[in-house]
Length: 380
Ligand code: ADP
Image 1 (cartoon, protein in one colour):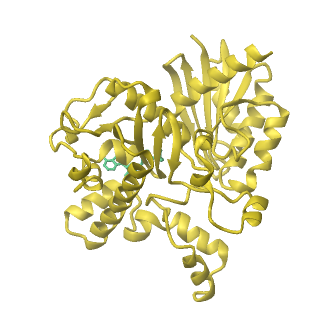
Image 2 (cartoon, helix red, strand yellow):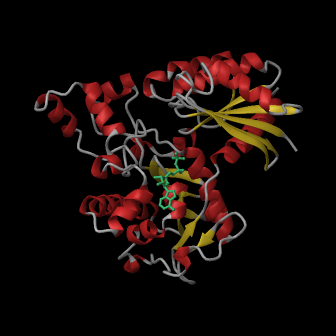
């Protein structure tokens, strides 16, 4: 078995998990980095703490989650100085995410110089989408000059969940058409044909597509021009509003779907509307991706909301019986999941199976890191 340390460095936190093969040996979170009374003064101190607290004996590779790989990376990549420089160059595309990943990489390379480091990109899985699926219809030269196009995110989750869904249904991955719905704080949909992403809802940044905890998802870009001109809001303020104060939070004051559902049950109209907007957006993307794929063997729900909310699953797919899509009311309560928490929740014999498949991005990062390490060694 191979020991892998997975690091997910955010702007103010570092999540870590130590694997031995598929088994988790240790996991934890260093939070409020840089804050008064936080767990660590900076990323270097956070990583030092992690490395002191886990047993790094026999560690083969460190896998780093990196949100944005631009057009440069289409798979997990062994990190050297050049790769680190490209990740740095991509910061303008992901100013909120890539700097933290980069500091995690820099510090880990310094602290563990003998251990191979791999970058696993959220965007990489979507590099298989054809040009027509990633091109925004705008001034082509301007878009080219500034890297403006769809990249898509949550790739490690969509890759993992689509593969697990095929396995759950006993389908060969290369023959399966699957729509994956990652519904966490961030949310995105993905159409997967034969194990390759062919469409996804997030865009240049994690802002486009589905309604999220605090992000708007799809809006008309005119909203931004209007708020700037008519309301006199500076661009930074509009960005903050649409990324941190929108989505469920903007519509209800709560970014947590559990709270929204509770209030909806109690008859709160704002929560009712937010739930409907959230579920309708999912349905619109399911329809679009059915059209992209031609047919779907399965629709898989994952992440916090997808795994835990029978209400959202039922509402998002309601009224689609004519398309061969139906949720079994009893199964949807997840009475009998397998040991991984996976379950089919559609009636037997449905043309499109509806599944609940818990995601495990860290395990996927660990496995991709080991694969990249093996590929790197055999290339040498
Ligand atoms: P992250 O994107 O941060 O990894 P998660 O995948 O943990 O987020 O998802 C967080 C979301 O899942 C929150 O909005 C939370 O309300 C929602 N959630 C968790 N449990 C439930 C539940 N039982 N019912 C509805 N939503 C839930």
